[in-house]
Image (tube, rainbow over all chains, first blue to last red; front, side, top):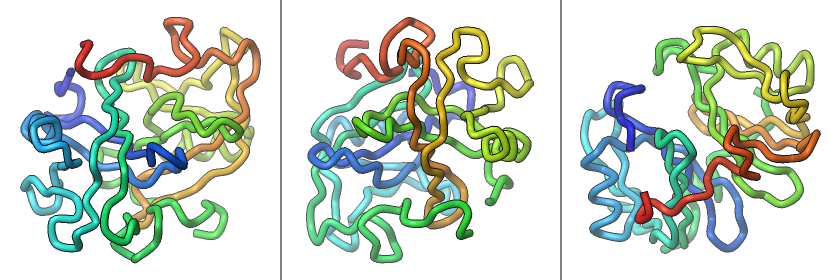
Length: 105
Length: 105
């Protein structure tokens, strides 16, 4: 993977492996991607807290990796997941972070 | 939208509005997002060429915007599209840029 284009980060798109909904987009550094592969749970790098975080580590709503795909130029990953816990991925309690149309913002 | 977290850019995830496949991830700056909304075709900011580019402007494989969604913290867009031309989105000729599993890379 090429982490050089974005100061050590790559975008990670999380998609529900069953419904194909896009649930969220986070960023991974090399350590977050390695943790994701090692543990089988989606782990990101928090830009605001400057630390790794495993999605759902407090809520229980972890994201179990079903498939990890990489794009043509090796700078983005697509993480297909099974949602654990109550299945609500967004910190607002919504099922997906993408619950608003742009014209409504 | 919050363009401040990534030096004026936001990730833009492109998803087929019919099949729900994730096709590619690009970046938009404010002008690219405005062009996307004004023209109805997905337009990105090229980090390598430092310019706007409308996907498919040479190949004819434009991406017609069906729906534009924004995430919970306003720093990512999800662009649901209808594929024009031959429908192959990737510059390699593949249908989607995500055609490889990470373990094969």
